[in-house]
Image: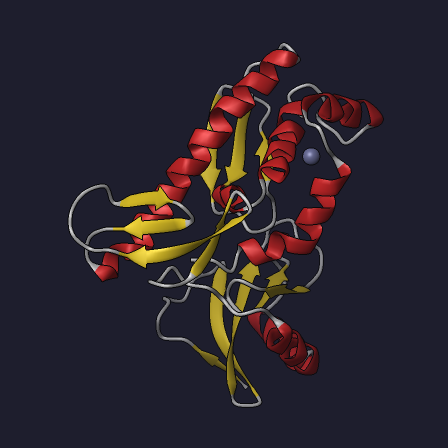
Length: 243
Ligand SMILES: [Zn+2]
């Protein structure tokens, strides 16, 4: 049976429960989506559980019924998930595709320094994760923002704004007004992957589709298109396991 969790208040749009699968507490998140036409169950690697999206007309019980019916599938997929890697002293973290070790050095000074393959984090241990993730977001912005402006210039377009988010399903997006949004975790991927994602979103400033013309523009803005897409398909989900 699915049990309610006391940690989150009940909401009309979202409900968080826990499934007991072979003695393992598996988070089940149910979300009502105004445009959903049917119930959709998918794995949520970051939470180590599953999400059920419900159309507005569906009862919460239909979501839990679906999860109960799929419990074997859920159990096997959750067991197969790679482990999460929190930001703690001694952990390994990729930065632009290169492995770095996180070290808590304490004391005052710059919150985070990147020195020969290590992230040296100052301050109290309990603030290490927040300091490092703040630093990584800022680093992502510092890499992505100038890149986006430079690429837009090549095709005579203008980027009005760059936003960094922790998006789970998309690496980037482009708004009609010329605002681009990226997942900060791209800073963990190799530089040629990050470069492709920026080129992809910038190409959308000219083509609001994935037409042949769009791909031709994207190819003008970055060296490789196929290899980074393949990298993201294979390794993208792993980037969500850090922190
Ligand atoms: Zn696109």
